[in-house]
Length: 59
Image 1: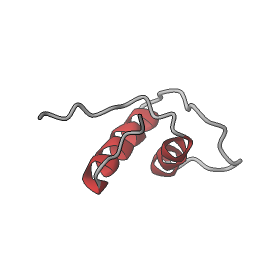
Image 2: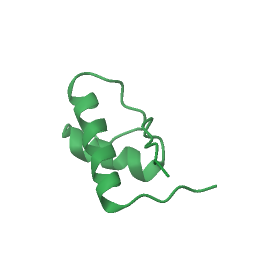
Image 3: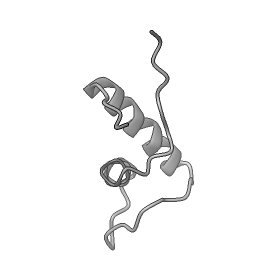
Image 4: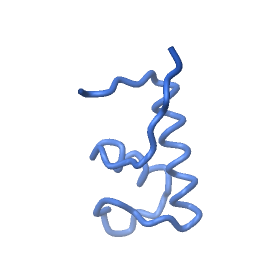
């Protein structure tokens, strides 16, 4: 089942992952040479579907 996120949830997940990357977490995808911006790397991970962060929605 594919999950659907609001734009706010997506922004929160990407920003949390960017913070992890900035603090030295391993990068989970191959990135273009010279790319070092954690936010851009997190976006690439999001598009690849490998971000290890999920949101628990309350009913």
